[in-house]
Image (cartoon, rainbow, N blue to C red; front, side, top):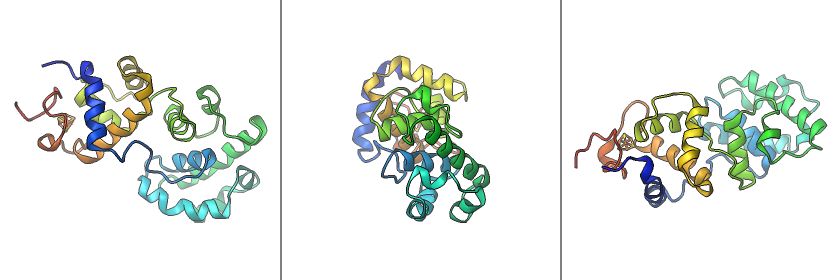
Length: 214
Ligand code: SF4
């Protein structure tokens, strides 16, 4: 059997065919600022839960400048159904202030600048870069990507940055954003943290952790 890593092109092709509608984030947004807010809100919350609260939030506070003078408590009523909402509210306001003072009120489109914004780490920055600016500067690694990568590529680590670096080494750059979304789709569908449904997985003949014997 070839290693899963050497099969990366075939893996991406098969996953694109299996999950053709999963090549972008499921978070709802109309611009880079809304995506930044939605992504910060999605930490330890499901995208569907975030999508329930953001339409009202974005209607009430439509621009970066709408947030700069707010107190966190003013955001609570919109986001309090989400975990960690107090911290997330504080970060969103701090992010708006930094974007206003350092970046002329516009969300920057580079990793170096994005990761200086409160609440934005490499994962959030990668989500923004690929979905709002169509730039592949890295690979966003969330919990689904960690689970699937460890099984499919035998990484044996939960460290997201190590996984990101390894994935970048053997994946063609133009596919970095796609790979994130496809691994998430696989993780949600058949390769879940709690259980793997290898019999339904389109990679079960090349995955070294498959329980299906060919
Ligand atoms: S074959 Fe099984 S372990 Fe491998 S990616 Fe598919 S579901 Fe996960």
